[in-house]
Image (tube, rainbow, N blue to C red; front, side, top):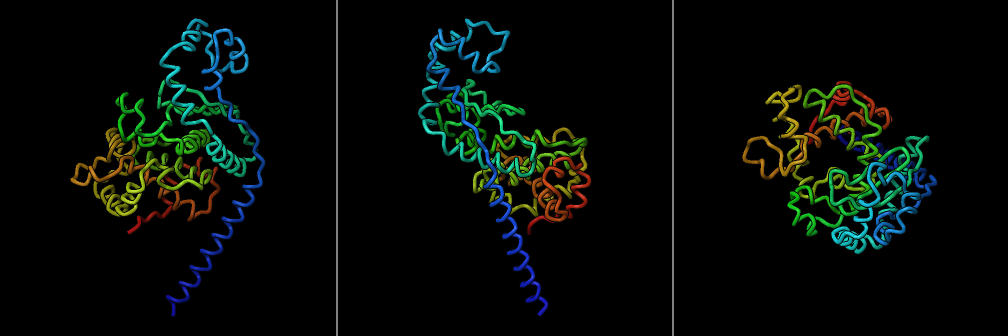
Length: 322
């Protein structure tokens, strides 16, 4: 009898939560967002040396004052640059799907931050410098499209870029990387000394993606394949037990972030299961802790981004999935 009552209450609560989320999404969808994806990459690719003055006038922030015009003219006529531009043009002949996802992301940000101003969104190429694939400021969002040509593109294979990084060099990840850029603008955290602190820092970034790009899968948000996210979910309890048994959470060992937080082909438990595991499992666990805190406290998303890890950890009452 008690089990039946519990089941009924749980079902009602779940339906209420889903209905509430649905109403929020309906409100978000009504928010007006108006912008154009400005294709600087195309404008620069089509430019002749005589067009440089006008380009600099239209996009002054794209041209360093310390770089002489001769460098830009050489770039306009460079065969490698032309090859990159051609590859980008073929992959991104139509950018409408990317824009639709950016519209939804901006709507979600505006819902939670009513003073947010939609930036100028500008696409470019940057010689496949994947560490700078997106740059966001208060007024500008830059997207380097040559970092999203597909994980097996020859630029990445021939350039000896590690496969575990190139896995996310796809157009589907553009809005995910943009969301990460905005998350870093909203986050604040004094404490980043221990592994737990780092886990929760990155957990907050991932939770912010839950909030502003809910249309993306968990695998896409963290940059895992479907099999990797399934592995993390299936082994969550064992990973947590390992962290507790080895007393890693409050450790300040500088090697731990490289083992469990940084980009890597796998996490480093120094066990046989290492090669089966995805990298960044510390980020994954931090994400689960922050989600548990949000569910337990009902705290506002922007407030969570400013909350210190000690409070999040204690009040989350986190328990791993069995």
